[in-house]
Length: 292
Length: 221
Image 1 (cartoon, rainbow over the protein chains, first blue to last red):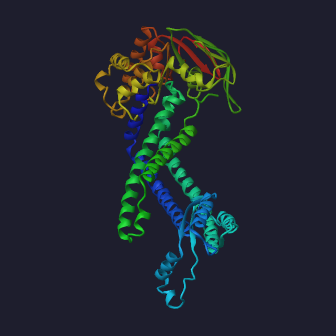
Image 2 (cartoon, rainbow over the protein chains, first blue to last red):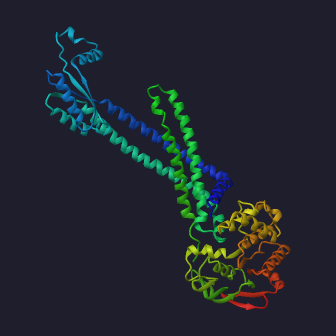
Image 3 (cartoon, helix red, strand yellow):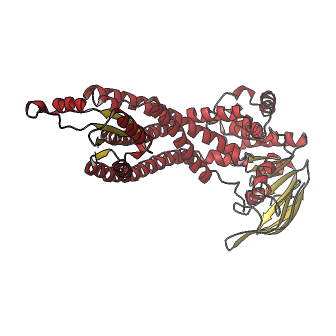
């Protein structure tokens, strides 16, 4: 059997049973919107957690007095440690400026000297922004001679770890449930379409069609339905997210704008859903020529 | 050659066919007669191996029921043409596509398919109806399409299971004439029927199934 015949049969099958084909496409579209919105929420929850983690810098205050050479040496030692992304030196004067910006108070009016120590603002690489890994780095930096004190928001980081672990578990559970529901819905719709064609399949068997010959057009038809379902779901979600992005403040709008890869994935998932649905159905319904 | 050797078929505790032995040669025209439920269709189903014998062996050409694999059955069916009482046409496609389907199944090249379909539809007198859908045709015309479909692959044997069962007497005779013509051109025809008028008129070999056995008779009753 030529591929062009299979493709023609698949397209004809789609057109001949237009109502059930459109029903399958609609089911795939709804399932994908369900999965897509869920994925968007998961992606954004993960983005939010990452943003929070990236804001939790570590600060290492230096023992005074400290020379410029010592600062350079300390900076390179800390930079060389595993998990360090960036180390920025904050001099006593800069610390004073930051203090003034943050509190509005000018210490020099109360004291005749600057009590703020020089420090390093330390940013960690993304995989090291967990409480356990951050604490290990904290201990290594604390042990360096010339570093007086190291501070970071340990309690908040631990809280984020706990919460994100719970969020991940819930999301994983929900994700599996939503995906299984989608596969069930699609398989069931395609199964109904194939059940309606049972007489047709029986006749095909009786005139000598092999299982593969009967199955292939149904499978391609499923993939086609998945493609159209994916296309519709991508379009609807794009319009939905764009509309929602206009309703919220500019700060939150980027969270609603999904990258092109997201829509490509929705399309791909649609085709996979169509493939899985039609495979499950044809394997069940187009069995070996009945004998015995 | 179709050959049954000591074939029995049980359905649950009921034995429908008992120890049947028969031979049908290429080029023959054979009627299978018997009362409704006597096992005429079962004999045909044994030939196209829709069921396998409980005991004994069926040989169809080079295929043997005792050793045939499930995946080989479609290839056996391509060597046969089968016509049913309820036509079993592919209702979602045209007359042309119904006949073309069996040729697609065997991987016949597209150019040849067109030629063969037109030729076969010409043989059954339905060239003019090639673009019609199956349900737009009369019963007699639908049976002609089914016969054209069965003939498309030039089978050695044409099996017809009550092909006139749903047709009026006039149309039944037309179908018989068509089948006789096909037989004259060399295709063996095995026709199960309880239409004894047709059997009498045709004057061909008659196999009667009665109480599970099969015997050759001169007249249907």
